[in-house]
Length: 199
Ligand code: HEM
Image (tube, rainbow, N blue to C red; front, side, top):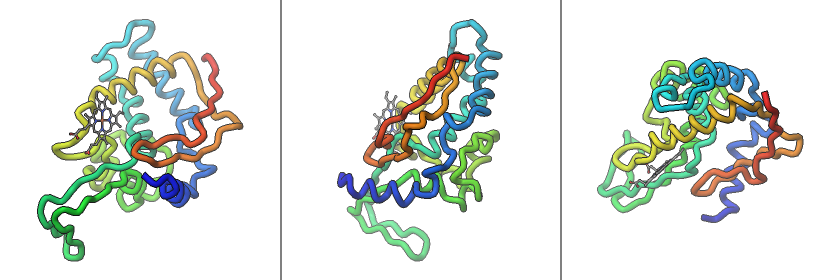
């Protein structure tokens, strides 16, 4: 992929949030809520699938992170036949369509006027409670080619956040530069510099 294009997309889509508040490290409130939940459900016991399943706040936080920062920058589909979408758009057979989750995940018409804000609460009633068209939430893709590792991926994220948040709090280093960079995978262009404190 042409990385210059990636940079241009980064700039346009993210210019409004260079000083924005879309990162968990900027939200001690949500870190504290997740920590309280993890400690209440797990205490000093070993994490297991049943305990992870009870961690609703953690799930909401992960869903919100995957909304604003979907790990996969683009998914692609090829039209196997001519497809008419509504009255105006015709996709001819053989055309490749690149789908950009970030555009769908940040559209105020779908998510409301706070679409650019980090607000895990929107997922309190699941994806259909958060988004006008639930099929527009596609961190793991959609349809027959949906990510087969979706449940494992969610589980891994839950384990990682549960273990880290139970013991540490995070804030952004003054050296952190917020420049998400789209390629096939979304990456922080200058890395993620965090200050980590034991709680
Ligand atoms: C948070 C973690 C993950 C995210 C966000 C993610 C996201 C995605 C996305 C967006 C796609 C494209 C789906 C589409 O085209 O509709 C995909 C495909 C795929 N993922 Fe994942 N994934 C994750 C973890 C995993 C894991 C843990 C595995 C395997 C252990 C995995 C294996 C695959 C495979 C094999 C495909 C291709 C499926 C196909 O084309 O039929 N993924 N993933």
